[in-house]
Structures are given as structure tokens and as C-alpha cells.
Length: 280
Image (cartoon, helix red, strand yellow):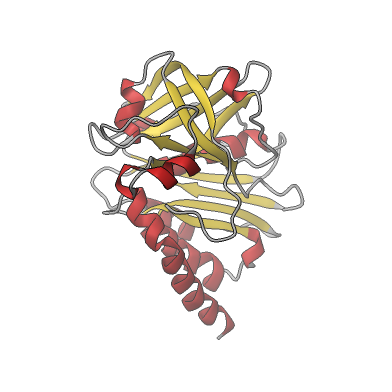
């Protein structure tokens, strides 16, 4: 998408595919490395993300890769296509960046690419962004999401100190999609089966006996169930907005381009409705 007026463009990073790994039937890992990551850094956020820049079909861009030059010299239809992925791990010593991709056969852009990617292939991206990390001052933590939020939830759980009180609910297609997470928090894996995305998550959070004290919550995934849980947490549970990291990573029936184009308006409308209900 075009840069907003007054925004300083971020210079893209580049990296090479080092190795790939199939984690489960619907999750593929790609590890990036190389000298292009010499200037890459992440902070303390556990939901860091990068925006991968995929060339438009049949288009070759001049070197060095420069997004601003491309946008000036190429028609919009030939601009790189952006797809956003959470950083699963960053190893500064070996300069290796790990990204996990949800895949559904040949559907989509980034998922099929992750399966085809081969060592040595060059990837351009911008980032990292990020805004959430578990608050050490909270009495307990709630982490909820579908497959798209799994990398961030895993990073967050692994960042919690031993013995921290936390409840983690992750919805996946079935038991074959569960993953090992290096944390002493017991993840509740919910198997979707033929149910709508997020239905099991909404049920699980509604059934949870909320402990006493201040909760810090991370809720991300498909926009419809996130909307329901936003109402539950903000309106029914009266959790302050500043104690919630909650947003739709994607929306059923929309690719990232379509969802990002409407996401700001969607979030503003839902937030206004629910803040009004909170104040009533």
C-alpha cells in the first residue's frame, strides 16, 4: 500500500533462505540468514513481525532493491505484494530469523512460497514492528489465538518467568497441528474440526474462572472471534483497554490486502460500539 503522507519510509532488509522445516501438516518454518541481516534488531516485544515483499508476477526490479524507487517508476499493479508474519525467533549471534507460515495447499501467496523456498533464495522485507510483551507487573496472563497467533503466543510463553500464572488457549485444526513450546505453562489446545474458526476459543474463555488480580491479555486471530472476545473482555469483564492486546490478524474471506484496507475502519467501529457499551 502507498505510504501515508509524512511517514518516513523504512529501508528494506534482505536475507537468504537458510533452511526450511515442516512443523505440522499446516505449518511451515523458514529460517533466514546472511549478511543482509547485519543491521536487523529486535527489542523486547514478543509479537514482533516483519512484512515480506513478494515481487509481482513476471516483474523484475532494479538492484539494489528500493521500495520507494519501485513505487515511483513502476505502475501500482507491479509493486511488490506485502505479507505480514510474526517473528518466531531471532538469533543475533548467528543472525538467523525464524518465521512460521500457515499453509493451506496452493491457497494464498506466502504459504505456498514457504513450501517452495530453497536455501540461497533472497527475500526482502521491512520491520520489525511489534507492540506487546507480557507485563511483569500483571498478576496473571491470558493468551488466546488461532494458528496465525501461535508464533506470538509461543514467544510470549517462552518469555514468561518460571512460575508465572498464565492461561493459554490455542485453536488448531486437529491434534496433528499441536507444537512443542518451551514453557512450563500448560497450553490448552483446542481442535477446530468442522466448527467455525474461533468458536472453541470463545467458549473456552467464557468458561474460564478468572483468577483475582490484574490480567494482561493477548488475543489475536480471525477478526470475527476476536470481536466476540473483545466484547467479553472489555464490556463484560471490564478489563481496561491498556491491559489488552487484541486485534484481528486476518478476516475470513479476505486476503491481507483486502483486510488491511478495511481493518482500521472495522477496528474503529467495533471499538466505538464496545467502548460505548462499557460506559453505559
